[in-house]
Picture 1 (cartoon, rainbow, N blue to C red):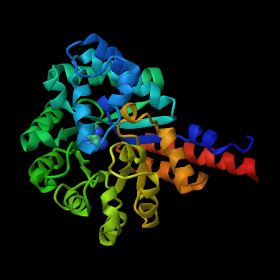
Picture 2 (picture 1 turned 60 degrees about the vertical axis):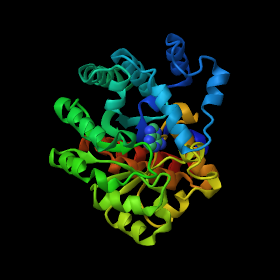
Picture 3 (picture 1 turned 180 degrees about the horizontal axis):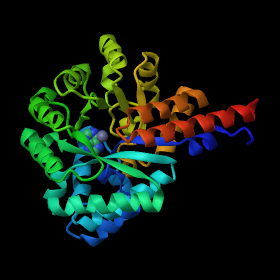
Length: 345
Ligand code: ADE
Ligand code: ZN
């Protein structure tokens, strides 16, 4: 094998993707097709206008836009279309396994009954495995705007249907003014039922909410968690307890959670020994994919082959997939790194 350039290496690097939202993964083409089919929608039907619609002034504006796109997804068939597109995109990024955040209560609010959602997830998961060799796990996330009642309903859905691939309970949406601790009872019920606890925390707020996610919700990984960076004791705890942060650099810039990539705390999180995985969050809305996130880390933070391979390994270790799949991904990463090492000797 000739010495590959970094883009070739990243493209070949086997990966897992642990933080992305189903509706936010819809490609521009898919969203345009949906908006053209629903003239009552507020989402543009023209590519240029959709591009402008996806320019976010801040995190709250982003959530607003996200909710409008969510309202386009109205049938089980739409869910399968999204999963088909997502699996195709993931396969093109050498992603073997992805944990997808599905906001069941929001899906129901746009017309998809729980029965239909469960069936669509089963159909989409089978299709992704057969057609693309990508395995899906499900994180059923509660939208904080729907409060603790919405979170209880989300958990009711997850436990009543428990679609194959169910991994855990998530918590997303607005952070400011929302206390993670209020969600302790529903996360306790999830844990008691054998689900993993995977909330967002510290995306747009500081370390206090990450502490709350760990101590009150029993978080096993943290969505984003970049607000942890100002608290050395928290960083120490995340490292000691092996709680991985699902870091999404492009998302954080697009939602103005950080001013620019140069200000992104990822290098400081890595330097503190915190387990970090890379993810895309809402790749259709942020014009990114997982390969791009790895390349951003090379170009912006100077991470090379060894460091990028380590991030991919951290993802595989932090994934709630089968032991067999984890071992296969780790072996594939080792094989690629070995081949690259031999080529450059
Ligand atoms: N829903 C979709 N994307 C989200 C994000 N980045 N943070 C919180 N909620 C979300
Ligand atoms: Zn997210």
